[in-house]
Image (cartoon, rainbow, N blue to C red; front, top):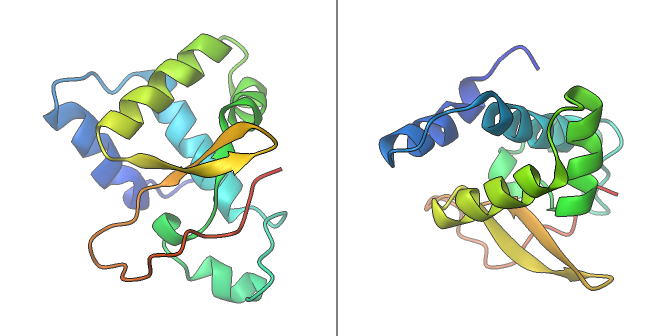
Length: 127
């Protein structure tokens, strides 16, 4: 992903809350965004073209383990504990939210902003 514009509000929120915007945090957020944009994501109710126009907040969910496997491909120096620690931080900062369980694993997604009116979480999953 060359255009980080969509992630800037998340980067800003990290810094504004007194945390450093580390390489690890950037890699994790960029990995999530890239996965949500990938052609492997499908939605039973929409086409790929419709998904491309959908904000990150409405796109999909992921588990920490799946995210770790994708992060490890980008940067093998980032460990599983770092992924879990940053997911917890991102949740505390309101960047991501827990949306349920899949096979006894917590699912996360980018938190919906105030402009999103639907109460139903996206059913798209990164698997």
